[in-house]
Amino acid sequence: MASKKKTPIGKGLPEKTEGDTQEKISFSPARIKEFFREVQVEFNKVVWPDRKVTTGLTGFVIVLVIVISIYLGSVDLLLGKIVTMVLR
Image (tube, rainbow, N blue to C red; front, side):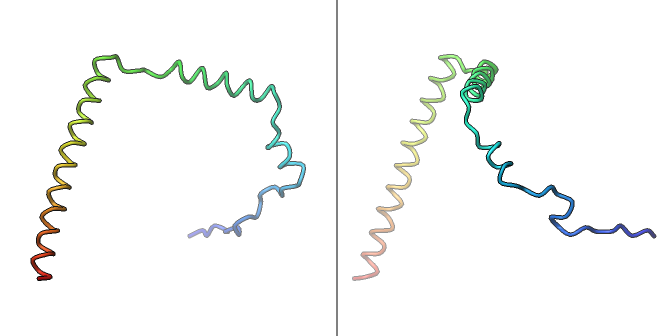
C-alpha cells in the first residue's frame, strides 16, 4: 500500500507581497464601469414574475402574517393568564 506524502497547510502557496494586495484593491473607473455592465447583464437574465403572481404572493404573505399574529397573540394571552393564576 502506497502512502501519500502530506504537505503542511500553507506550503506550496505563493507568498503574498504588499504589491499583490494593492493590485486586488485598486478601484479604477474602468473596473467600476465593467462591474456595472456585468450587473446589467445579470439583471437581464432574471425572470421577473408577472403582476398576477406578485399580487397573489403578496396576498398570501399578508394573510399568513395575520394568522401568525393572531396565533402568537392568543398564546401570549393564554400564557399570561396561566402565569397570573399560578402567582396568586
